[in-house]
Every structure is written in structure tokens, then in C-alpha cells.
Length: 184
Image (cartoon, rainbow, N blue to C red; front, side, top):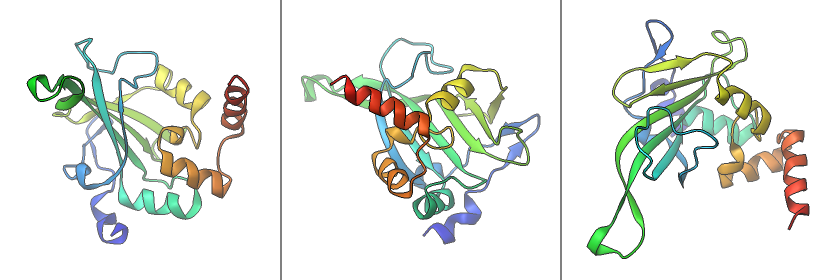
């Protein structure tokens, strides 16, 4: 599957360092979903304080390489799709479901284009994603807390196990994890 789709999961840039969001990204490898996991800042583009559910996808060729090596290859595209969460109303007394896309965040590895290898892009889900310049909080947060190569593999349970087995977890992440385990 990953080989057949490798040609459809490549990076395509528009003018002025804008990234075209692949139309088929929802058929990519689904990594995780979470509720209100937006770190220390509101989700880019979100004009609401309502809860957000997100879905994270990765291009199939990058996923296949990560499974083999525990590392992300050049050309990796991680897409975090942020959606409003709505109450199920009369169907359920609790719980939420996903509605429209509020914003999308893309984390890409392109060693030729970006000095730090990785770059971030944001979009409302309709227009091409715009480049987020280095110095933005996302860069330092990922550098400081990413479990593998500035990516938050710690929030993707199956990939966390692969990285652990392959020995590719960042040492600072292992120390942070050990410190948290000691507080229990």
C-alpha cells in the first residue's frame, strides 16, 4: 500500500513557501485523535474557545519508513486536522463529535528547503498552508519536547512503541518520561 501511494504523498509547494494540502490526506495513515491537545496556545486560526478534536495523519511512504527504522525520512508530512467538537444533544447525555475543520497544522521534513530540516505550516483547511517562520513557539516546543526528531511521537501510541523498540527516542524525552514516572 505504501509503495503504491508514494507518488501521491509527495510535497507540493505553491508560491511564497505555501504548501498545498494534499486532497487525499484523509486516506493517509491515521496516527491519533485527541481532545483539546493544543499545548500552551490556542490552535492557529481558531476563533472560538469551544473544544476541538483533532486527527493526525502521516503520508504512507513516511509511515512505512518509520516502521522500518524508527526515524522520519525526508518528505515526511504530518497533518493535524483541528475540528470543532459538538455535543451529541439528545442522542447522548455526554460525549462530543467532530464537526467542521477550524484549522490545520502541517509539520514537514524537507532537508533541501529548510535549514532545520523541519518546518511548520498552518491553514484554515481551504487555502494553501502558509509557512510559519522559525522563531515561532511551535519550533521550540517541538525541539524541547518531541520524542523523535522534533515530532510528538509520544502522543501516537503505536509509533512510540516502535521508536522505543528501535532505540530512536530522544534522550531528553527519556529523562522527562523518567522524571514524570518518579512523581507517581
